[in-house]
Image 1 (tube, rainbow, N blue to C red):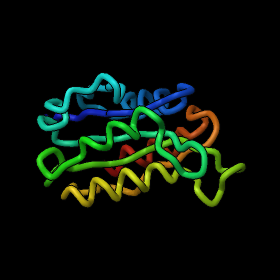
Image 2: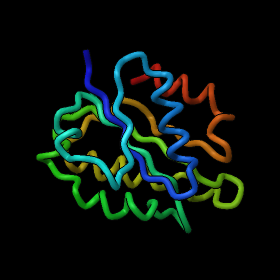
Image 3: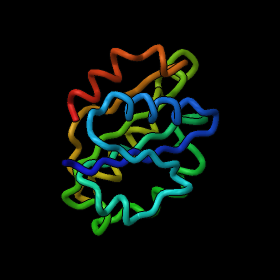
Amino acid sequence: MKKIIIVYGSTTGNTETLANLISDNITEDVKVCNVIDVDLEDIRDADLVLFGSSTWGYGDLQEDFNEFIENFSDDLLSGKDVAVFGCGDQDGFAEVFCEATETIKEKALECGANIVTENLKVTDDPSDSEDLIIQFVSEL
């Protein structure tokens, strides 16, 4: 059985909700962890890592995730299957909608990760994105 961990950074709770909705749709055992509480060994031990962050300001990572991304390294992610998800404001910031997910994906790729699917990007209430979540999970 695959070891899966979901690591998220959330300020208002939307990305945490999204992380839990993703977990609810995965049939295997999943550990869901706030980025401020994650143990890097859990990431090293996982077969699949899902990273999630909301996007703030003009394309910025969520504050806690911004600090955490400094831990990304070849040692942590090389050869690791990774997927990325996040929440953003599509109406107010269309040109940088969920840009944080792209930042995470690019950094993971630089560290040798295998990106297994396109980033999941949701706006507003994550529970309104059930079809997108199901599609994302089916591609993991």
